[in-house]
Amino acid sequence: MDTNTLATIVLLGGFFLMVFLRFPIAYAVGLASAACLTVLGKPLVEVCRLMVKGISSFSLMAVPFFITMGVLMGSGGISDKLIALANSCVGWMRGGLAQVNIVASYFFGGISGSASADTASLGSILIPMMVDEGYDSDFSTAVTITSSCEGLLVPPSHNMVIYATTAGGISVGSLFLAGYLPGALLALTLMIGSYVISVKRHYPKGDKFSIIGFLKQLKTSIWALAAVVIVVIGVVAGFFTATESAAIAVIYSLIVSVFVYKGLDWKGVWKALDECVSTLSIVLILISTSAVFGYCLTYLHIPDIAANAITSLTSNRIILILLLNLILLVLGCIMDMAPIILIATPILLPIAKTCGIDPIQFGIMVVLNCGIGLLTPPVGAVLFIGSAVGKTPLEKVVKATIPFYGCMIIALLLVSFIPDISLIIPKLLGGYVPAV
Image (cartoon, rainbow, N blue to C red):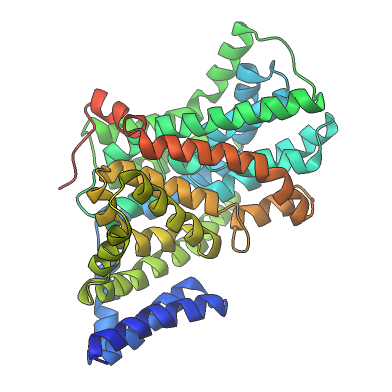
Protein backbone atom coordinates (compact mmCIF):
# COMPACT_ATOMS: atom_id res chain seq x y z
CA MET A 1 0.00 0.00 0.00
CA ASP A 2 1.51 3.35 -1.02
CA THR A 3 1.62 6.42 1.21
CA ASN A 4 -1.19 8.31 -0.54
CA THR A 5 -3.60 5.37 -0.27
CA LEU A 6 -2.83 4.98 3.44
CA ALA A 7 -3.25 8.74 3.97
CA THR A 8 -6.63 8.63 2.21
CA ILE A 9 -7.80 5.78 4.44
CA VAL A 10 -6.60 7.62 7.54
CA LEU A 11 -8.27 10.88 6.47
CA LEU A 12 -11.68 9.55 5.46
CA GLY A 13 -11.78 6.50 7.73
CA GLY A 14 -10.68 8.51 10.75
CA PHE A 15 -13.19 11.24 10.02
CA PHE A 16 -16.21 8.94 9.66
CA LEU A 17 -15.14 6.84 12.65
CA MET A 18 -15.03 9.94 14.86
CA VAL A 19 -18.38 11.14 13.49
CA PHE A 20 -19.84 7.72 14.33
CA LEU A 21 -18.37 8.01 17.84
CA ARG A 22 -20.14 11.40 18.16
CA PHE A 23 -16.98 13.54 18.26
CA PRO A 24 -17.72 17.24 17.64
CA ILE A 25 -17.40 17.75 13.88
CA ALA A 26 -14.65 20.35 14.20
CA TYR A 27 -12.52 17.93 16.25
CA ALA A 28 -13.21 15.06 13.86
CA VAL A 29 -12.16 17.16 10.87
CA GLY A 30 -9.07 18.58 12.59
CA LEU A 31 -7.79 15.32 14.08
CA ALA A 32 -8.34 13.33 10.88
CA SER A 33 -6.50 16.02 8.90
CA ALA A 34 -3.59 16.11 11.39
CA ALA A 35 -3.27 12.30 11.24
CA CYS A 36 -3.34 12.40 7.43
CA LEU A 37 -0.57 15.02 7.27
CA THR A 38 1.50 12.94 9.70
CA VAL A 39 1.20 9.91 7.41
CA LEU A 40 2.24 12.10 4.48
CA GLY A 41 5.35 13.16 6.40
CA LYS A 42 4.29 16.80 6.75
CA PRO A 43 5.27 18.73 9.90
CA LEU A 44 2.36 19.36 12.29
CA VAL A 45 3.09 23.08 12.16
CA GLU A 46 1.50 22.84 8.71
CA VAL A 47 -1.84 22.25 10.45
CA CYS A 48 -1.59 25.61 12.24
CA ARG A 49 -0.51 27.40 9.06
CA LEU A 50 -3.41 26.02 7.06
CA MET A 51 -5.93 26.79 9.82
CA VAL A 52 -4.81 30.41 9.96
CA LYS A 53 -4.83 30.64 6.17
CA GLY A 54 -8.34 29.18 6.10
CA ILE A 55 -9.85 32.04 8.07
CA SER A 56 -7.59 34.78 6.66
CA SER A 57 -10.11 35.79 4.02
CA PHE A 58 -11.68 39.22 3.56
CA SER A 59 -14.95 37.76 2.31
CA LEU A 60 -15.23 35.53 5.38
CA MET A 61 -15.31 38.64 7.56
CA ALA A 62 -18.91 39.05 6.41
CA VAL A 63 -19.91 35.88 8.29
CA PRO A 64 -19.52 37.25 11.86
CA PHE A 65 -21.21 40.50 10.84
CA PHE A 66 -24.24 38.71 9.36
CA ILE A 67 -24.53 36.47 12.42
CA THR A 68 -24.35 39.54 14.69
CA MET A 69 -26.98 41.32 12.61
CA GLY A 70 -29.30 38.33 12.86
CA VAL A 71 -28.92 37.99 16.63
CA LEU A 72 -29.49 41.71 17.23
CA MET A 73 -32.57 41.87 15.03
CA GLY A 74 -33.88 38.56 16.36
CA SER A 75 -33.55 39.80 19.94
CA GLY A 76 -34.83 43.29 19.18
CA GLY A 77 -38.58 42.71 19.24
CA ILE A 78 -39.22 42.36 15.51
CA SER A 79 -40.82 38.90 15.60
CA ASP A 80 -44.26 40.21 16.59
CA LYS A 81 -44.18 42.83 13.85
CA LEU A 82 -43.24 40.35 11.13
CA ILE A 83 -45.94 37.94 12.32
CA ALA A 84 -48.50 40.76 12.14
CA LEU A 85 -47.31 41.63 8.62
CA ALA A 86 -47.61 37.99 7.52
CA ASN A 87 -51.06 37.76 9.11
CA SER A 88 -52.24 40.79 7.14
CA CYS A 89 -51.06 39.05 3.95
CA VAL A 90 -52.28 35.46 4.27
CA GLY A 91 -54.17 35.12 7.56
CA TRP A 92 -57.50 35.04 5.71
CA MET A 93 -56.77 31.63 4.15
CA ARG A 94 -57.91 28.23 5.46
CA GLY A 95 -55.32 27.25 8.05
CA GLY A 96 -54.44 30.93 8.21
CA LEU A 97 -52.00 30.72 11.12
CA ALA A 98 -50.05 27.97 9.36
CA GLN A 99 -49.78 30.22 6.30
CA VAL A 100 -48.76 33.12 8.54
CA ASN A 101 -46.05 30.93 10.03
CA ILE A 102 -44.63 30.15 6.59
CA VAL A 103 -44.73 33.73 5.29
CA ALA A 104 -43.33 35.14 8.55
CA SER A 105 -40.39 32.73 8.21
CA TYR A 106 -39.68 34.16 4.76
CA PHE A 107 -39.58 37.68 6.21
CA PHE A 108 -37.66 36.71 9.35
CA GLY A 109 -35.20 34.54 7.43
CA GLY A 110 -34.10 37.56 5.46
CA ILE A 111 -33.04 39.09 8.76
CA SER A 112 -31.69 36.19 10.81
CA GLY A 113 -30.34 33.93 8.05
CA SER A 114 -30.66 31.07 10.53
CA ALA A 115 -33.20 28.23 10.65
CA SER A 116 -32.47 27.66 14.33
CA ALA A 117 -33.08 31.32 15.20
CA ASP A 118 -36.28 31.31 13.15
CA THR A 119 -37.61 28.21 14.93
CA ALA A 120 -36.69 29.46 18.39
CA SER A 121 -37.98 33.01 17.88
CA LEU A 122 -41.11 32.61 15.76
CA GLY A 123 -41.91 29.15 17.10
CA SER A 124 -42.07 30.31 20.70
CA ILE A 125 -44.80 32.77 19.65
CA LEU A 126 -46.66 30.99 16.87
CA ILE A 127 -46.78 27.38 18.09
CA PRO A 128 -48.70 28.22 21.31
CA MET A 129 -50.89 30.62 19.31
CA MET A 130 -51.73 27.90 16.76
CA VAL A 131 -52.47 25.32 19.48
CA ASP A 132 -54.83 27.79 21.22
CA GLU A 133 -56.67 28.26 17.91
CA GLY A 134 -57.28 24.52 17.54
CA TYR A 135 -54.27 23.35 15.51
CA ASP A 136 -52.55 20.12 16.54
CA SER A 137 -49.22 20.70 18.30
CA ASP A 138 -47.29 18.30 16.07
CA PHE A 139 -48.64 19.98 12.91
CA SER A 140 -47.81 23.43 14.31
CA THR A 141 -44.26 22.35 15.09
CA ALA A 142 -43.81 20.67 11.70
CA VAL A 143 -44.90 23.84 9.89
CA THR A 144 -42.53 25.93 12.00
CA ILE A 145 -39.40 23.84 11.48
CA THR A 146 -39.88 23.26 7.74
CA SER A 147 -40.66 26.90 6.98
CA SER A 148 -37.57 27.98 8.96
CA CYS A 149 -35.41 26.61 6.12
CA GLU A 150 -36.60 29.48 3.91
CA GLY A 151 -34.25 31.71 5.89
CA LEU A 152 -31.25 29.73 4.64
CA LEU A 153 -32.08 30.73 1.06
CA VAL A 154 -33.28 34.30 1.56
CA PRO A 155 -30.35 36.73 1.81
CA PRO A 156 -28.35 37.71 3.67
CA SER A 157 -27.42 34.12 4.53
CA HIS A 158 -23.99 33.60 6.05
CA ASN A 159 -24.04 30.02 4.76
CA MET A 160 -24.04 31.40 1.21
CA VAL A 161 -20.93 33.42 2.06
CA ILE A 162 -19.26 30.24 3.32
CA TYR A 163 -20.22 28.44 0.11
CA ALA A 164 -18.96 31.30 -2.08
CA THR A 165 -15.61 31.26 -0.28
CA THR A 166 -15.29 27.46 -0.44
CA ALA A 167 -16.28 27.22 -4.11
CA GLY A 168 -13.99 30.08 -5.17
CA GLY A 169 -14.80 32.60 -7.90
CA ILE A 170 -18.47 32.83 -6.88
CA SER A 171 -20.13 36.23 -6.61
CA VAL A 172 -21.79 36.71 -3.21
CA GLY A 173 -24.15 39.25 -4.79
CA SER A 174 -25.25 36.72 -7.40
CA LEU A 175 -25.84 34.11 -4.70
CA PHE A 176 -27.90 36.57 -2.66
CA LEU A 177 -30.16 37.37 -5.60
CA ALA A 178 -30.35 33.70 -6.58
CA GLY A 179 -31.89 32.76 -3.23
CA TYR A 180 -35.07 34.82 -3.44
CA LEU A 181 -37.05 32.77 -5.96
CA PRO A 182 -36.08 29.33 -4.56
CA GLY A 183 -36.99 30.62 -1.10
CA ALA A 184 -40.37 31.76 -2.41
CA LEU A 185 -40.82 28.43 -4.22
CA LEU A 186 -40.15 26.54 -1.00
CA ALA A 187 -42.66 28.76 0.82
CA LEU A 188 -45.26 28.15 -1.90
CA THR A 189 -44.92 24.36 -1.79
CA LEU A 190 -45.18 24.41 2.02
CA MET A 191 -48.23 26.68 1.85
CA ILE A 192 -49.96 24.30 -0.58
CA GLY A 193 -49.18 21.35 1.67
CA SER A 194 -50.44 23.25 4.74
CA TYR A 195 -53.61 24.28 2.94
CA VAL A 196 -54.43 20.70 1.91
CA ILE A 197 -53.90 19.42 5.46
CA SER A 198 -55.84 22.37 6.93
CA VAL A 199 -58.85 21.70 4.68
CA LYS A 200 -58.75 18.00 5.55
CA ARG A 201 -58.58 18.69 9.29
CA HIS A 202 -60.95 21.69 9.20
CA TYR A 203 -58.47 24.11 10.73
CA PRO A 204 -59.78 27.69 11.11
CA LYS A 205 -59.12 30.71 8.93
CA GLY A 206 -58.64 34.31 10.01
CA ASP A 207 -60.19 37.66 9.20
CA LYS A 208 -60.74 38.87 5.66
CA PHE A 209 -57.90 40.59 3.83
CA SER A 210 -57.71 44.36 4.31
CA ILE A 211 -55.43 46.54 2.22
CA ILE A 212 -55.52 49.23 4.94
CA GLY A 213 -54.45 46.69 7.57
CA PHE A 214 -51.68 45.43 5.31
CA LEU A 215 -50.30 48.91 4.66
CA LYS A 216 -50.42 49.69 8.38
CA GLN A 217 -48.41 46.59 9.25
CA LEU A 218 -46.00 47.21 6.39
CA LYS A 219 -45.31 50.68 7.75
CA THR A 220 -44.49 49.20 11.15
CA SER A 221 -42.27 46.43 9.75
CA ILE A 222 -40.44 48.47 7.14
CA TRP A 223 -37.58 49.27 9.52
CA ALA A 224 -36.78 45.56 9.89
CA LEU A 225 -37.16 44.74 6.19
CA ALA A 226 -34.93 47.67 5.23
CA ALA A 227 -31.91 45.88 6.70
CA VAL A 228 -32.15 43.26 3.95
CA VAL A 229 -32.51 45.96 1.31
CA ILE A 230 -29.35 47.67 2.56
CA VAL A 231 -27.33 44.49 2.23
CA VAL A 232 -28.64 43.11 -1.05
CA ILE A 233 -28.96 46.37 -3.01
CA GLY A 234 -25.65 47.60 -1.68
CA VAL A 235 -23.78 44.48 -2.77
CA VAL A 236 -25.50 44.03 -6.14
CA ALA A 237 -25.22 47.71 -7.07
CA GLY A 238 -21.54 47.68 -6.15
CA PHE A 239 -21.80 50.40 -3.50
CA PHE A 240 -19.87 48.19 -1.10
CA THR A 241 -18.64 44.62 -0.66
CA ALA A 242 -20.53 41.90 1.19
CA THR A 243 -18.29 42.48 4.22
CA GLU A 244 -18.84 46.25 4.21
CA SER A 245 -22.59 45.85 3.77
CA ALA A 246 -22.70 43.37 6.66
CA ALA A 247 -20.85 45.82 8.93
CA ILE A 248 -23.29 48.61 8.00
CA ALA A 249 -26.22 46.26 8.59
CA VAL A 250 -24.94 45.51 12.12
CA ILE A 251 -24.91 49.21 12.99
CA TYR A 252 -28.36 49.65 11.44
CA SER A 253 -29.70 46.61 13.35
CA LEU A 254 -28.35 47.99 16.61
CA ILE A 255 -30.05 51.36 16.05
CA VAL A 256 -33.40 49.78 15.04
CA SER A 257 -33.43 47.26 17.90
CA VAL A 258 -32.47 49.75 20.63
CA PHE A 259 -33.96 53.06 19.52
CA VAL A 260 -36.80 52.28 17.07
CA TYR A 261 -38.44 49.05 18.25
CA LYS A 262 -36.89 49.37 21.73
CA GLY A 263 -36.82 45.59 22.07
CA LEU A 264 -33.29 45.69 23.45
CA ASP A 265 -31.64 47.71 26.20
CA TRP A 266 -27.86 47.95 26.46
CA LYS A 267 -27.75 45.00 28.85
CA GLY A 268 -29.62 42.98 26.24
CA VAL A 269 -27.15 44.10 23.58
CA TRP A 270 -24.23 42.69 25.57
CA LYS A 271 -26.13 39.45 26.08
CA ALA A 272 -26.80 39.25 22.32
CA LEU A 273 -23.13 39.88 21.56
CA ASP A 274 -22.16 37.14 24.00
CA GLU A 275 -24.43 34.78 22.06
CA CYS A 276 -22.73 35.88 18.84
CA VAL A 277 -19.29 35.02 20.22
CA SER A 278 -20.46 31.50 21.11
CA THR A 279 -21.87 30.95 17.62
CA LEU A 280 -18.88 32.50 15.86
CA SER A 281 -16.36 30.41 17.76
CA ILE A 282 -18.04 27.24 16.47
CA VAL A 283 -18.28 28.52 12.89
CA LEU A 284 -14.71 29.81 12.67
CA ILE A 285 -13.21 26.65 14.21
CA LEU A 286 -15.11 24.63 11.61
CA ILE A 287 -13.87 26.85 8.79
CA SER A 288 -10.25 26.71 9.95
CA THR A 289 -10.14 22.92 10.44
CA SER A 290 -12.01 22.38 7.18
CA ALA A 291 -9.30 24.35 5.40
CA VAL A 292 -6.80 21.70 6.50
CA PHE A 293 -9.21 18.94 5.48
CA GLY A 294 -9.66 20.59 2.08
CA TYR A 295 -5.90 20.79 1.59
CA CYS A 296 -5.60 17.06 2.30
CA LEU A 297 -8.43 16.27 -0.12
CA THR A 298 -6.78 18.30 -2.87
CA TYR A 299 -3.28 16.93 -2.19
CA LEU A 300 -4.59 13.35 -2.43
CA HIS A 301 -6.73 14.16 -5.52
CA ILE A 302 -9.82 12.81 -3.77
CA PRO A 303 -12.23 15.20 -5.57
CA ASP A 304 -10.97 13.93 -8.93
CA ILE A 305 -11.21 10.32 -7.81
CA ALA A 306 -14.75 10.84 -6.47
CA ALA A 307 -15.83 12.65 -9.62
CA ASN A 308 -14.47 9.88 -11.86
CA ALA A 309 -16.07 7.21 -9.69
CA ILE A 310 -19.51 8.82 -9.78
CA THR A 311 -19.44 9.74 -13.46
CA SER A 312 -18.25 6.22 -14.31
CA LEU A 313 -21.50 4.85 -12.87
CA THR A 314 -23.57 6.66 -15.47
CA SER A 315 -23.38 9.45 -18.00
CA ASN A 316 -27.07 10.25 -17.67
CA ARG A 317 -27.39 13.86 -16.51
CA ILE A 318 -30.68 13.30 -14.68
CA ILE A 319 -29.30 10.37 -12.68
CA LEU A 320 -26.12 12.30 -11.83
CA ILE A 321 -28.14 15.25 -10.50
CA LEU A 322 -30.28 12.88 -8.44
CA LEU A 323 -27.11 11.24 -7.09
CA LEU A 324 -25.69 14.63 -6.07
CA ASN A 325 -28.87 15.45 -4.18
CA LEU A 326 -28.95 12.00 -2.57
CA ILE A 327 -25.36 12.34 -1.35
CA LEU A 328 -26.08 15.76 0.15
CA LEU A 329 -29.30 14.53 1.78
CA VAL A 330 -27.50 11.57 3.37
CA LEU A 331 -24.71 13.83 4.62
CA GLY A 332 -27.38 16.13 6.07
CA CYS A 333 -28.64 13.25 8.21
CA ILE A 334 -25.26 12.83 9.94
CA MET A 335 -23.57 16.25 9.76
CA ASP A 336 -24.39 19.88 10.43
CA MET A 337 -24.75 22.44 7.66
CA ALA A 338 -21.42 24.31 7.70
CA PRO A 339 -19.24 21.17 7.65
CA ILE A 340 -21.18 19.79 4.70
CA ILE A 341 -20.67 23.00 2.73
CA LEU A 342 -16.98 23.14 3.62
CA ILE A 343 -16.19 19.48 2.98
CA ALA A 344 -18.58 18.41 0.21
CA THR A 345 -18.34 21.48 -2.06
CA PRO A 346 -14.77 20.83 -3.31
CA ILE A 347 -15.72 17.21 -4.06
CA LEU A 348 -19.16 17.61 -5.61
CA LEU A 349 -18.90 20.96 -7.43
CA PRO A 350 -16.70 19.54 -10.25
CA ILE A 351 -19.31 16.80 -10.79
CA ALA A 352 -22.08 19.40 -10.86
CA LYS A 353 -20.18 21.35 -13.51
CA THR A 354 -19.94 18.25 -15.70
CA CYS A 355 -23.75 18.05 -15.50
CA GLY A 356 -24.03 21.61 -16.77
CA ILE A 357 -25.08 22.98 -13.38
CA ASP A 358 -23.99 26.56 -12.77
CA PRO A 359 -21.99 26.92 -9.50
CA ILE A 360 -24.53 29.48 -8.28
CA GLN A 361 -27.41 27.09 -8.93
CA PHE A 362 -25.43 24.34 -7.21
CA GLY A 363 -24.93 26.61 -4.20
CA ILE A 364 -28.71 26.92 -3.86
CA MET A 365 -29.03 23.14 -4.18
CA VAL A 366 -26.42 22.58 -1.46
CA VAL A 367 -28.07 25.04 0.93
CA LEU A 368 -31.55 23.57 0.38
CA ASN A 369 -30.28 20.01 0.82
CA CYS A 370 -28.53 21.02 4.02
CA GLY A 371 -31.72 22.71 5.19
CA ILE A 372 -33.63 19.46 4.77
CA GLY A 373 -30.83 17.75 6.69
CA LEU A 374 -31.44 20.09 9.63
CA LEU A 375 -34.88 18.50 9.95
CA THR A 376 -33.81 14.85 9.80
CA PRO A 377 -32.63 12.62 12.64
CA PRO A 378 -30.21 11.77 14.12
CA VAL A 379 -28.40 15.15 13.91
CA GLY A 380 -31.20 17.51 12.84
CA ALA A 381 -30.61 20.48 15.12
CA VAL A 382 -33.75 22.37 14.06
CA LEU A 383 -35.84 19.23 14.57
CA PHE A 384 -34.71 19.04 18.21
CA ILE A 385 -35.20 22.77 18.76
CA GLY A 386 -38.72 22.60 17.31
CA SER A 387 -39.59 19.62 19.50
CA ALA A 388 -38.40 21.50 22.58
CA VAL A 389 -40.11 24.78 21.70
CA GLY A 390 -43.36 23.05 20.74
CA LYS A 391 -43.23 20.75 23.79
CA THR A 392 -44.05 17.84 21.49
CA PRO A 393 -42.37 14.39 21.44
CA LEU A 394 -39.77 14.04 18.71
CA GLU A 395 -41.40 11.01 17.11
CA LYS A 396 -44.71 12.87 16.74
CA VAL A 397 -42.94 15.84 15.13
CA VAL A 398 -41.13 13.59 12.64
CA LYS A 399 -44.38 11.86 11.69
CA ALA A 400 -46.17 15.18 11.20
CA THR A 401 -43.26 16.49 9.12
CA ILE A 402 -43.38 13.66 6.54
CA PRO A 403 -45.84 15.47 4.18
CA PHE A 404 -43.67 18.58 4.39
CA TYR A 405 -40.56 16.57 3.52
CA GLY A 406 -42.41 15.77 0.30
CA CYS A 407 -43.07 19.47 -0.32
CA MET A 408 -39.41 20.30 0.24
CA ILE A 409 -38.22 17.51 -2.07
CA ILE A 410 -40.49 18.85 -4.81
CA ALA A 411 -38.95 22.32 -4.40
CA LEU A 412 -35.46 20.78 -4.42
CA LEU A 413 -36.09 18.87 -7.65
CA LEU A 414 -37.51 21.95 -9.36
CA VAL A 415 -34.44 23.98 -8.32
CA SER A 416 -32.15 21.17 -9.50
CA PHE A 417 -33.66 20.71 -12.95
CA ILE A 418 -34.80 24.25 -13.80
CA PRO A 419 -31.72 26.53 -13.65
CA ASP A 420 -33.64 29.77 -14.16
CA ILE A 421 -35.40 29.39 -10.81
CA SER A 422 -32.03 30.27 -9.29
CA LEU A 423 -30.48 32.34 -12.08
CA ILE A 424 -33.28 34.44 -13.57
CA ILE A 425 -33.22 37.21 -10.95
CA PRO A 426 -29.41 37.63 -10.99
CA LYS A 427 -29.51 37.76 -14.79
CA LEU A 428 -32.37 40.29 -14.93
CA LEU A 429 -30.93 42.58 -12.25
CA GLY A 430 -27.38 42.41 -13.50
CA GLY A 431 -26.08 40.64 -10.42
CA TYR A 432 -25.12 37.48 -12.30
CA VAL A 433 -21.38 36.99 -12.55
CA PRO A 434 -20.42 33.64 -14.12
CA ALA A 435 -17.99 31.65 -11.98
CA VAL A 436 -14.40 31.49 -13.12
